[in-house]
Amino acid sequence: MRKSVVTALLASAIALPIALHSAASVSAPADGGTVAIVGATIFDGTGAAPAPGTVLIQDGRITAVGADVKVPRGARVINAKGKALLPGFFDVHTHWTAGGSPSTFPQIANAYVAAGVTTVNDFNEAPEAFAPLRAWLGQMNAPHVRFAARISTPGGHGADWADQATTIWVNTPGAGKAAIESLVPYQPDLVKIFSDGWRYGVSPDNTSMDEWTLKATVEAAHVQNWPVLTHTVTVDRGLVAARAGVDSLAHGLQDRPITAEEVAAIKQSGMAMAPTLAVYDPYKRGDVKADDPRLKQTFRKFGFALGNVKALFDAGVPIALGTDAGMPGTPHGPSTLHEMELLVQAGLTPSQALVAGTQTSAKIMRIDADRGTIAVGKRADIVLIDGTPWTDIKDVYKVSQVLIDGKLAYGAGAPALPVANKTDRLPSISVPALIDDFERDDRRSSIDTLRVDTPDGGIDRSVEITQTVPRDEGGKALSLSARMAVKEAAYAGFAIPLSRGSITPAKISGYKGLRFELKGDGAYTVRLNGLDGVWEAQVQGGAGWAAVEVPFSQFKPVERRGKTGPAFTGDGITQVEFGGSRGPGKRMWLQIDNVRFY
Image (cartoon, rainbow, N blue to C red; front, side, top):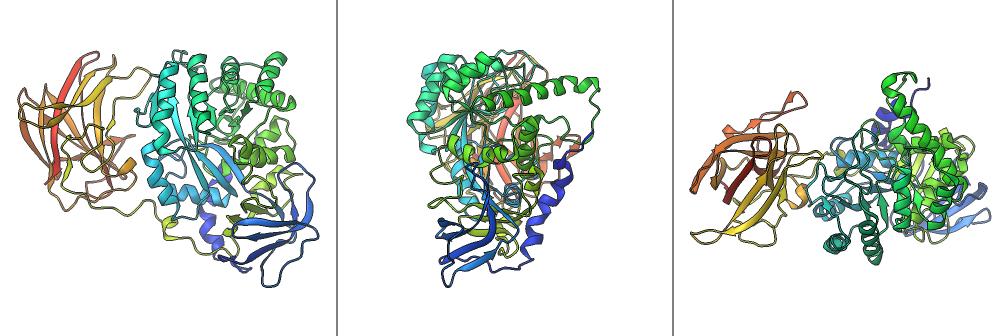
């Protein structure tokens, strides 16, 4: 059995950016002036035959392409003799999550740049995080990252772990339209809708979005010029997405072979597909036995996915490149290159797979006027490769140099990485003593962060309502009322981020503890959530208001995945959380006011 190239190359792909930056052999392009890439064989991303030529770049844009282009005097020259020159690759489906590999934002950026991936869609973030993440990326050597707003159904896939500050829940056309309107202030680059409740055949479909709601939500997104991709993995739901006007499926169809009539219907709709074969590859963790009974369903579905990609492609349905990177066994960077291998395995030629990863992906993202091909006026996002990937797709792994916006970002001659690429977080900030007095009616804290609900995860989730309510003594407090899910360890709570989107950590070691006022019906948990762990303490609420002080010495590390977290240091803290557990189906309530450090 074959061994996945992804597994073999992951460690080296993460380490290479710093190593190769020190191996300068050409002059690095600087701001201003003209850059000339000479001696390369150009694959322009359109599917045209590769041809030798020169590419000129000025102010981040391609100004000339061709065999007869003359290099102007004073241009900074990159000698690419013997190399292939292609548009930078796309990955239209990734999750920049702490559970992925790599697991931190700067290191994920490094991995993509090293793989020649210059435009990426991130499906992982809450809209509150878009602005701080865009600012952070601006400090890095990074691909262009486009952020997707997330919409699902109550209990649906993608809504089974996130609250509505991350994934909005809708189940009517009106709710879908309202969800899109609520996102306008955040200006997402696209929308992901979890429209298919079929969880890969391992759970019942109780949560698929109806066609009327999906269509209304898509139409509202298109008014904002936001492309819509859907989590759709079955043929029948793929047809629903096509009729609803979805721009592209975000996965392959894998429950059964698609019929000729169904292929024709999808083709007529104009919908594309990014099949994310890399996340489903049965071999991605190494050698496996195809006759392993535990893997039979995986192999069966993967076979359907491969066959359906080829059937749709042959009919003229656009096939884009997405991977679901960040999910288990699907590392950032190498998985994008592996996806092109798998498209070839599905039956595309190497040239067709390269077009999928460049021009077609740009088209379905509605940015093909800006990038995706090597042409005059296009953004100079370029990858140079030691090989001919249009004849042997495995050559995509031989990335030599990468330019982003016309600047050498990776490979020989590239400048040293910025400091932001060498850390795993932003510098910690100080926060005022008063975190939230709950006097605002817009769900925002006293430090102008958006409070988030933190119920338990799963298809069956505890139902909770948090809102500000008047106090008899004057002013307002935060009230939480919950009906616990019918399961063990049901939980309901809410968190106050210490920075917008919980992106920038806080250092609170200058304080001694946490003070607040509490009223409730029993025992509760107070947590300090951070980048390095979670620490919690137990408190008791009664029928009347009581002032509570919890010194930091009482916060104990929470065990996660069988490991006890580090001792509390007061640095890297992102949220203060309050919540509690009750028995299955039981009720819980609490009120909190005047949360502050002391």
